[in-house]
Length: 167
Ligand SMILES: [Zn+2]
Ligand SMILES: [Zn+2]
Image (cartoon, rainbow, N blue to C red):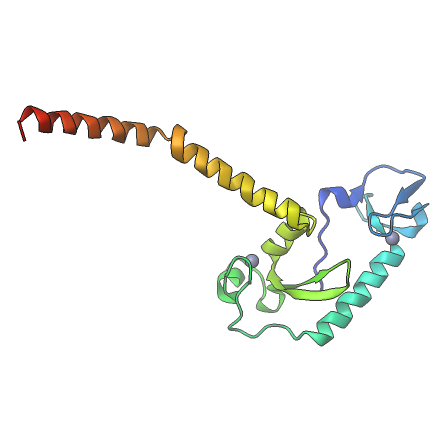
């Protein structure tokens, strides 16, 4: 079964007259969009939803579900590790495909699929995220870790002790 994610920007609250589909960009009446039980409306039109479902079904046939030795190509976790968190083994892997070219990209775990979606499948945004995390690590590594400062002080104290004993 295909798992569909509703990210914050995929749904619309309230009752607008029409919506611009986030996939095809066509402004269409509400009847062309799926209304969920919560009253929220999906931002992808019925035509795009159907087309995408057909694409995923085709790609599923062309690319068999991974065997038990498979690991997620992004987080490197094995099926057992992911299934421990309550998922059935047959639902561990999510078919990931390129929406622009409608081609198969790979089988990934649910978390990594959510991550890719959060970064809009966009290389620049994903690289910016890597750089952002990296910069923070550098910052706290160089200046802001109190442990490091403490250690430096201890180090200079022992240097002085050493000098005092005349070695
Ligand atoms: Zn559409
Ligand atoms: Zn993963």
